[in-house]
Amino acid sequence: MHRPVGITVSRHIIDSQRLHPEATGELSGLLSELIVAAKTISAEVNMAGLADVIGLSGKTNIQGEEVQKMDEFANNTIKKRMARCGYICVMTSEEEEDIIPVTEGYEGKYTLAFDPLDGSSNIDVNVSIGTIFSIHRRRTSLTMGQGTKEDILQKGSEQVAAGYIIYGSSTMLVFSTGEGVHGFTLDPSVGEFFLSHPDLKIPSKAKYYSINEGNLNYWDKNIRRYIEHVKEIDKDDDRPLSGRYIGTLVSDFHRNLISGGIFLYPVDNKNPEKPSGKLRLMYEAAPFAFIIEQAGGKAITGDGRNISDIEPESLHQRVPLIIGCQYDVELVEDFLMERK
Ligand code: AFP
Image (cartoon, rainbow, N blue to C red):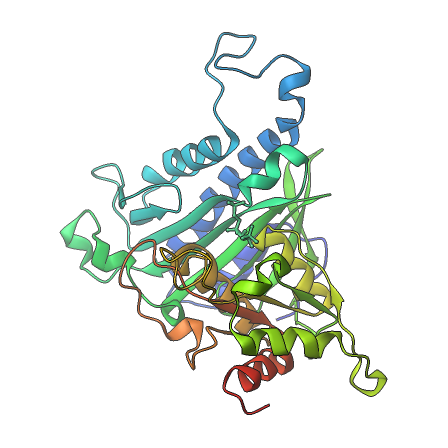
């Protein structure tokens, strides 16, 4: 389907829904509600740097209202808007221990997992941050009312939609409902997202590699060998790759998707409490795996599994993540399996 640059995200959603005569409009409604939450967060993020300047720091602002930390604000904004939207039956947030119920009487047929503000350590230093979301169809019957953990704990390949909002030099929304990946840029003067990046495809080979090299001495020897490899000079193989690491997965992912790259957060032995690396399956790895596969890339753990095939066992389960251009992800796998 031709998607002309410049159409609004609302029109894009309606056009996509028309491709499915059986659709009830609930997924479209759910995405539209999420987009409103994203715009609210975007407006607040743009003001974050001014908090100290205009005296909004501390517990109350000049209107005497309580000031929330940005990640709390983002979490509450999504929770409040989605609890009564009528399209989901349960939510889970990276910020909360347990599942979040929706308001009684408003239960719908989808579930929502979200990371309200990814890269929160970058907020105070004016570096891009983002929101990530993942949508599944509920497993239990709609007549059962409130959703359960069983509804939420589903593997990535069963996602109906996934996406992210990046609060960067512009605010962008990138998402997929399983029919390609499309990017929209927010025009803040009219408060509308416009299609700017239709049908995004990741380049076949990486230009950039992204990894926290400060962890080098905690890595397995095969990851070290791979990183040595990407730094070697070999003009015929377009090496060395350039290193880029922002420390906000949304931003590192977004750059690699557009320009071609590979992101790695492998297993390390830095912290015995995190034997599978740092990143979360439900809020980070699985939604990005859905998007990258739709864009022609790949996401793996490095121990023989595709991220999308992992059946989650708990809400905050962590997984190693190697994600990006297919060629490079497969090459890392060759190094890890010692085929290289
Ligand atoms: P924060 O939200 O604590 O800043 O973590 C961000 C993140 O989950 C992800 O967005 C980054 O890719 C990753 O952690 C960075 O982790 P390191 O600081 O260990 O490199």
